[in-house]
Image 1 (tube, rainbow, N blue to C red):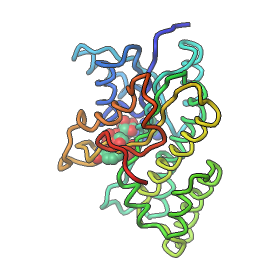
Image 2: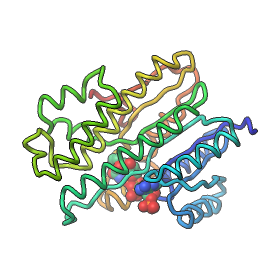
Image 3: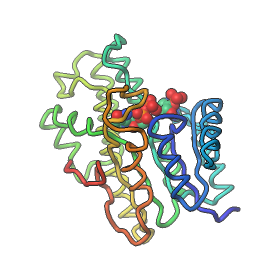
Length: 276
Ligand code: NAP
């Protein structure tokens, strides 16, 4: 078994994830795994980094596929005996002009952004080694979407005692409410992406709390973040930040020094803790 530190970035064949891998290859003292659901696109991305003189390793990972997540888990367990850095970056967003029915957008978006991210965490968080760092890429849109929720929902999403099961129930309820056409009446905003990212931010707060309760002595730091508005296939060419600039906050959180005890369980953008 290798004692080399290891970092994994989900959805990193392009966009912000790819830029996070590039930065980690330069700064992380260990093996960096670029993962992608499509091995062809993943290998191509690894080759691109190689041309820049950087060495990333590849492992397949489709966050929508539990078998794929478990295969990565088993590989990390066997080869490294765990994991030091996990960046949950993989995500999707329908374009504003997309005419897919809202209920379908809700189900598909939540499936990857919330349930996929949660499944990766369920399988990989137990592998995180002491002083490990976990970064869940959320969005400022989670904050604006929270503001668009009913007072009752806002209270639940801001609660310091909400459980993962309660959060999962609420995310499922959103999808069901869109199918019944009652999501506005039930206090939800008109953004499936926003609700999925509320899920990611709240999940991060819950996971950080559980780490405090269950693994306090392990000094693991887990945070949600927004990369900013970044020029990628998702956000388009008018966005203000380059992918490398978008990677800065996630990489800062992934590389928090071993003597740091904060931030933890926070929502961070531009390397600054934001109120939730
Ligand atoms: P992007 O260029 O569209 O890249 C998304 C990445 O996620 C791609 O590598 C994609 O793989 C991967 N992915 C999608 N579904 C996946 C799945 N089921 N399993 C594994 N990988 C999957 O988007 P981006 O702008 O870099 O976004 C990265 C993250 O930042 C997302 O979580 C996004 O919500 C968040 N974010 C972005 C912005 C922005 O302005 N760009 C702002 C705030 C937050 P394929 O190539 O196979 O599709």
